[in-house]
Length: 159
View (cartoon, rainbow, N blue to C red):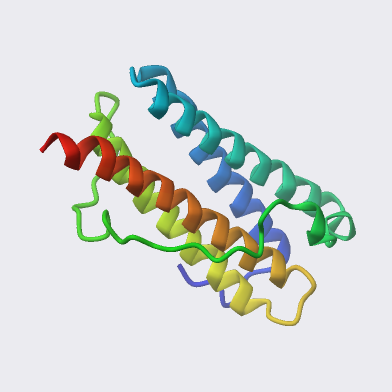
């Protein structure tokens, strides 16, 4: 996704849409899974995505209110990318998708979010919000890591 001619406003609006979509995915999937551990992980991911959306909405209204990155938990922490789902086939998510298909779709979506926020950080280098984009890229990579660990623990363990 090229962000070469994007404004900060467009970037924030797109982030809001992406985070809302991820929130809906994790909330809806959480209602379907049986495993308490999977339910908890999806609940945590949904809460993170909702927090991201709200943060972008605040930034859209008043960017000065979000420039103090010290108030955001673990934003500077670098996250490992297992790459477990990278080679798997990407497909549209159907309403009757299996848990495996949902995990693959979600992990690939988190990878796209990571790439999107990384591109924004690069594009707006020098702007006060650039660090915010870097931080959100790392958080999305952290979500991908959680999903890939779940994939390893639940899907690959069963095969």
